[in-house]
Image 1 (cartoon, helix red, strand yellow):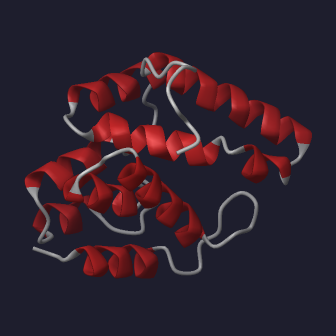
Image 2: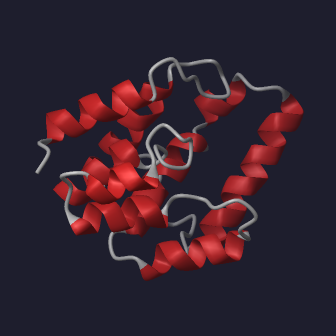
Amino acid sequence: MLTPPEVESLARSAHQGQTDKAGRPYAEHLQAVAEGVRARGGDADQIAAAWLHDAVEDDALSETWLAEAALSDRTKAVVLAVTKRAGETPEAYAGRILATPGALLVKEADLAHNADPARLAVLDAPTRARLTEKYARMRALLGLTAGRDESV
């Protein structure tokens, strides 16, 4: 099995040169999601999945690589659960996350970082409004209410 530092290094390498919508190195998002999962009580499988949560979706790593990787089956299942598919409805995506043990916590940490007001503040107003609505809709589909602590 890959060790936690190996998973982090692999994720950083896979996303090397990629930036987020604000132009920041993409690895900063991965680290924030992994830290968010850890802060929410996530286990080693969920933290590994947090580092890899966008790797297949962003074509940084292939599904074949994931299937053959020295990762737990649970980590692989969570990564696949949070990987959006082309043409997939938000409802189908949310359903897969809810049906996969451990995936909701990873997606919650992802949404919390994506919706961070400091990150959104650097975007233009139309993009900020579109993303705020998108993240709120996904939180609602996942049953993540405003009462849950998103600031962790």
